[in-house]
Length: 236
Length: 121
Image 1: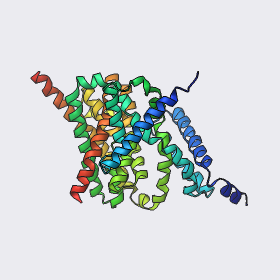
Image 2: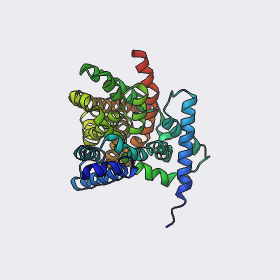
Image 3: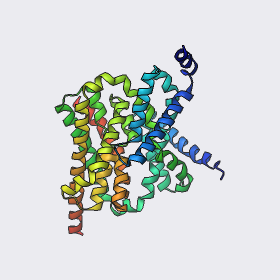
C-alpha cells in the first residue's frame, strides 16, 4: 500500500531521478576518497546503486528517467566545454604538433580496429559490437557515436569507463615495460587509450604527460567520430 | 560571492552547443552536434572571438563533474541486461585488451616519430 502510494506520487516527477542520482554519485565520490582506488569509480558505483534501488522499490526505469534526463542533458554543453582545456594547452600543442596529430590519428585508428578485431574474435552480437568501437574516446563523444552507428549508448558509456579505469590503473606500467620513455609519447598514449581517467593518472606522472594526454582527448574523439562511421559503412 | 556572472558563461556554452546541433542537422549528422560545438568553441577561442575567461568557470563546473551526467544514461543499461550478461566476458576482454593495444601502439609510434624528427632536425 505504502509502495503504491510512493510510486504514483513520484513516478512522473523529476525530483526522484535527480535526487537518486546526486545522492548515489555523492556516495560514490566518498567511497573513492575512502578507498583511494580508481576501481571505486563514482559513476559505476552510482549506476549499480541506482539499479539496485530501482529493483528493490520496483520503480520503473521511465520514472527514474524523468529526472535523469534533466541531468544527462548537461553532457551536451560539457562536450563543448572540452574545448577549454585543449585551448589552454595550445602552446604545448604547437610545440609538438606533428607528434600529437600523428599520434592521435594512430591512437584513434588502433582503438577502432583493435576493438573491432577482438569483438569479432569473441563473437559478440551486432549492437554490442557497435557499442565497443568508440570505447577509447571521451564518454559524450562515444555515446553520440554509438547512437549514430547503431550501438547502445548506455553500454558505450560503461565500456568507456572500463577503458579509462584500465589505463589509469596500469597504463604507465605497461608503457614502461614496453620501453616507452618519452613523456610526450606516454601522454598521447594515455589520452588516446583512456581519455579523462587516463589524463588524471598522466598528470600524477608529470605535468607534460598530463598536458599531452589532455590535448589528445578532444583530438582522438574528433578523429574517431569521423573515421568510425566510414569504417562501419565500408565493412557493412 | 555573487555567481550571477555564470549566466553569461552558461549562455555562451549552450548557444555554441545549439549552433553545433543546428550544423549537425544541416550536414545530415556526419558529426555529432556536441562534437561540432566543441570544434566551433575551439575556433572561437583560438581566433580570439571569445576569451578563455568568458567560459572558463562554467566549463570547469561541467567538466569537473562530467561523469555525474552519464549516470542516468548508464542506468539505462538495465534494459539490455540480458544481452550484456550473456556477452559480459567478451565485452570486458575486448575493452581491456584493446585499451592495452592502443596504449602500446600509440606510445611506440609517437616515440619513434619523435626520434626521427630529432635526427632530421
